[in-house]
Image 1 (cartoon, one colour):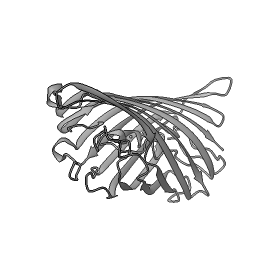
Image 2: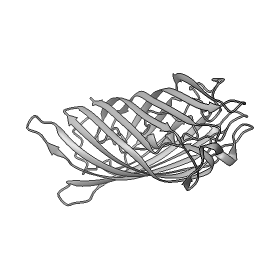
Image 3: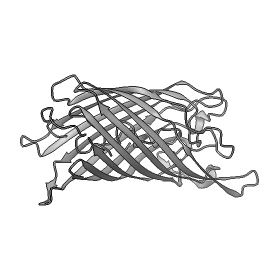
Length: 320
């Protein structure tokens, strides 16, 4: 089927154990919680503002919810007739829980465990619309973190794997709509934080991640994906009660290669997307709440693919 689902401040001295503000946005936390298993751009959740940028030893626990409704058919750089695509809608709620722990100022680990609820509407052999719903654990991600390039921990790299733990055998879904991709993927990423103004009020961050399947099923091999993010945020306003409000804006670019395998549909997979994402974080002590809404303003889709124009996220984290 032709479908696609289509993811700073000046760092202080080593004294705090929690993640910095913007610790959990996307694509958030070096893994947006949504372990990817779709050829759809879910990866934009995985590289968001919330990189859990570490700033000292200690840990962070988080939970996240994301929502994406792919209900527009696109071909190339423009919207196309729904009649050109047998698939009509892919509506997904992504949930995840996870943790990051920095053993010291240089080394840390992270785990993300996702759970997806997906409703898939397509057409049967008679051309009639049919819908299928499925919920299951997704593909778990394990990562290592190295942030020892400089004393302020402003630059780091991540490395790890996406495991084939998600369900990739639901009979009513196509391989590219399954909750699990059925593949084991290599994950490599990097990030950098910096200040834009001398008073440290305005800050920036850049991130990138490469995901490459290294083991997959014969019937389906998801395309490799590269995602980059550049963003800025204002240090925020503090209330008399001690809460801090931090506005964020980021731009995400995603490139995905075509799928492979006997059921991979290479002519209807692969894309380039640009997404603008305003967000807001509220910090109260060690608790952080982050919300964002992403708006895709550029799509270049190979063949006919279902696209979500908006993407939504909410993340709750606790540092210890």
